[in-house]
Image (tube, rainbow over all chains, first blue to last red; front, top):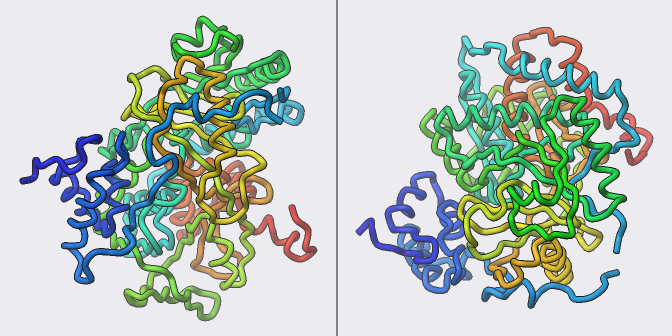
Length: 90
Length: 422
């Protein structure tokens, strides 16, 4: 069971998450920062709900709403040349 | 195009003198000797650290090494504000001479942490600062002279030599200064490994535990009240970064620290080692992490004072553009996410570390002006050494005394009376 991959992009297994929890981490966001879960190419599209569900099983108050996980611009990966300011800058 | 967009260059070539160079060299040695003095606590003493950022964790780590009982209370998550949201730079190049003794010694301590089994992903991969025009090149040449005199291992490089370190650098960049001994570490790994080590050493760690009240009696802190109970200790250290001013105000202590947003941008994972050193220039700083993402960022007038952590489209457009001016071949690499941290600024851009003015057993270590992660090792060790010496009435030598004076809380006393902003 420990080998089950929770975050495919960053190759984070259930075992990695359990190890991280040993440090007293309590929220999905803390697990993310400790393991890089959800920080890969898909930015947690699959694993966000998995980690939230898993962490909610660990706390008596259940699933935290809204999720403690942060969402960051640009949400989907965008090429730098599409984002970069064009022409002369002030 | 702005004439000067050199990034992270605090060294003022007009201001620094040969006397400054000599003093720097003296301070480098004095600080190293001071930190290497043997300290071992003969009796039981406890320290409570308020604030579980990288400064609090490393201060706790070195206090534990001396033999103190350590507890740390953190209002939210450990090392999750600026301690987890920064570029991971550990560098001498770019710093003003007065900071060099700290940054050089911090590099040594980062190496020692690895030897002691703390995982940090610390690498001495150097720091490359580039010039885009003759104005910047002339400044870099003068910096080079000063750093060489101060004993820093730096080199001036042409475009071809720079490409050994950054193969995709634009051909238009003709001069850079490279420091061999600078490095970087990975914040998340470092803090998790420190937490594990602290816990194994018996430290009590409380996260999601905010301080409700610091109780004082007869000029001493006697307890810290939190929702998880009231904690007591022999000594108390406040290392709450940009929140320090507010906490200390309630203790009638004047610690001027201003919070400011700093934005960072992360690309997808790209081929390993296409950017080997920490890199600064053209108004941005960047590095490639051990995982392979490129992190870039850099402040500007659009940044806000305060604790706001949103990213702005202006900053994303401007800084992505500057990144591509430096590395045009990476134009199809994707931006994965943007994020922001809170930098803590002091009026003189110098950290505040030492004893509080009125409370006998209270200390502070904060105000690191965006350099905190890099020098956290040396500042953690210095705080723990200073606390040990202070409570054992050990006389400090003059160089160390002068260095600590410049970091002291007391330097703001005059300004507090006159209302001057330093």
